Length: 245
Image (cartoon, rainbow, N blue to C red; front, top):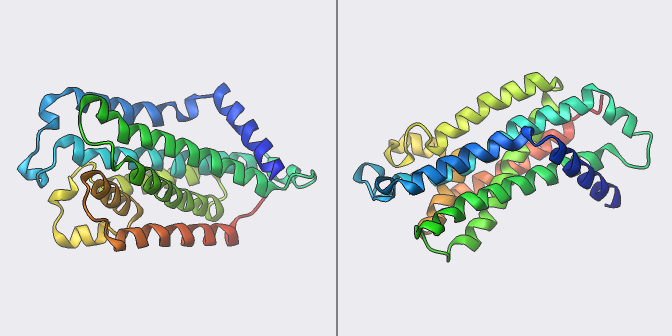
């Protein structure tokens, strides 16, 4: 535990020295949220969006965007670079086990994902949009959402040893998650069959539970089960397939 905490602090310091790794991941969704909050028409309910405003429809999508960029692109590339440079192999000769470094990276990416996601969920309150009540539930759901994407990213890191290939596959997979979260075509306009498929993907399930929590609606058990299933399955595959060299 002490080794993992020390490595976590080290990774955090390295991130502060090179913030470009996550800067666009944070800036793009936050700027998009600010722009939508400042456009009055984006805050008005639309019949085509199932009675939701543009802001309400795209808020969960922006959370998914940030989480996938961190977990599916940044993390596999970072872990792959450590493996490619032989850092994980050399770490095995020290009292700190390579698993401590992996735990530190997972913890750092999880923390960033949750903080950015919470900012995206809470920011509209500054414009009088939404209510404070659901924020606690949304914060809890954010942890599950971020963990499910981290599990998929860890699975990519285990199955694909080359960091550039893993990052490329992660980018393609992230785009699929954005689609199921409603980035290009609002989920409220999905046909029933596409919505059913979407709710079994991490992106669609995340958008479903976060949207329901924000609206004060009942959260379906199926998308929660899907997120938990992806989390368990992803980490299980990662633990069996990961190689230090």
